[in-house]
Amino acid sequence: MLVTLALAWLTAFSSRSNTISVGPVLPLIHRDLGLSYAQAGLLFGIPVLMMGAFSIPSGLIMARLGVKPVLLISLTMLALGGGLRSVAPNGAWLFVFTALLGAGIGLVQPALPRLIKDHFTRNTGLMTGIYSNGFSVGATTAAALAVPVLVPVSGSLSWRGPFILWGAVTAVAALAWLFVPGGKSRGGESLAPFARIFRSKLCWIASGIFLSQSLLYYILNSWLASYYQSLGFSLAAAGSTVALLSAASIIFGFAGPALSDWAGRRPPFILAAVVSLGGVLGLMLLPQIYWLWPLLIGSSTSVLFTTGFVIPVDVARPNEVGAFTGLMLTVGFGGVMVGPPLVGFLRDATGSNLYGMLVLLAIAAGQLWLTLLMPETSPRHR
Image (cartoon, rainbow, N blue to C red):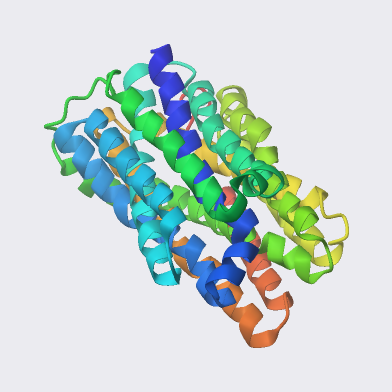
């Protein structure tokens, strides 16, 4: 079981390191390939759209074939898409390889809660916190190393070097799963749970919360560095804000699910939403404290992200976990497609950051409302 948990962590690490590696080097890609702001935003919009589109198919494949085939197929797609971005000669091919990457992530993420449901019957929040820490560490590592380390050592490859590295790490994860059982489920399950889950009010509330945190996280990963560059910060300082956004999630992404075993799921959700709202207001009103607001928003979105994965484990039967998680991720990631391109379009059209910030503020307010509607799901606190 410990080996499975460790590989689940590496799988989570791979999915985030490949995605977040774009943000810090976006100004270099923008310059080299001649992309507009709106086109550059598609580098974040396309993956999350594919994540949403492939989350429900992931549950269907799990029901028929089992968990391990999903892990192997998805990690192979993720490794190929992530690595091939390094040879993209223009924006069109970069978008194609980015779509393949996003499809791989969309397939892999619903499999991870099912692993927890299959292998662990107690302290599910803690176990979720452990593997989901890989998301946080992967994002932080990719963001922190990109500009100061990986781009310089890549030489003439420039922004392409980090893509090669994280694609190779994902390939290692795929090979490792060949030698480890992917879960107790063997496939051949009924597809009836999908119809039941789609009628669940709780699932739709959880999906809305997941959408709100995804929008905040991916919009800021897309545009935070560019936002601070437009305020006069250096590329290194502006890029560090993306690393700070992810760094906070290392602690809080683990702590949220773990503490929810003790306090219940609802209190961390509400507190995180309040912190998100405060962080967005800080970016708007006091941007000069550039290190604080990414830390706050990174911590709050990570709590909502990782604790959200515990909800299906709490309330769904084993053969329903894939359906619940699939719907949650389809809504949560599918809707994000409009976020980064919209903010980029508003920047192109107005030449100002204000309207993008107002979009973030509206998202944070809606997130707080949804968390207040969220019922308690922890078996210990119902």
